Length: 236
Image (cartoon, rainbow, N blue to C red; front, side, top):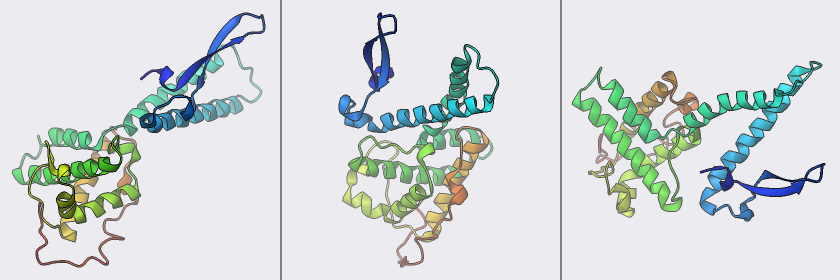
């Protein structure tokens, strides 16, 4: 994807009467495909941050002389901070789990641990697949996870066995297959703790910028009215 996906070239006459051109940001009705709206908004947000960054930098200069090349240097400094941040926000959660297991399994390679994380990952993969039924381009990204998203994942886990029956396609394919049984609150809480461990590791190893679990308490809004059936399992 290059700048022409979000910009269009416009021609104009400069002060000397010579023909010149510049790029301006496209609006959605200027040809940006509906599937690109999310990326379009990311671009708009990034440009807004750049504008604020330049304004802040200029104000900090106060009465100092703004020399030639100052703007280019300011933009370069902005991108030095912005690009790594955007890459962190675009880290896929499933990929982060895979990296976590690959690296930390050296210290603990027990089958029970591997199975527990595999089941947690499968639930998240199914959650992602379920969301894609309505939003085909949906991906679970670390930078977009917040308390609301975690609540949604927790809610899905409670109904996962029902969702698999209703939407069998979310349990078909690599990393999605396997028997699914009803889960009790303790099982769901354990899986959320495993996900929290992955996110905490991601922050410590600077793979992601922040941990959405910092403001999340598992089951705060969900277990109070949950009726527990004797058939509820601790796995699956």
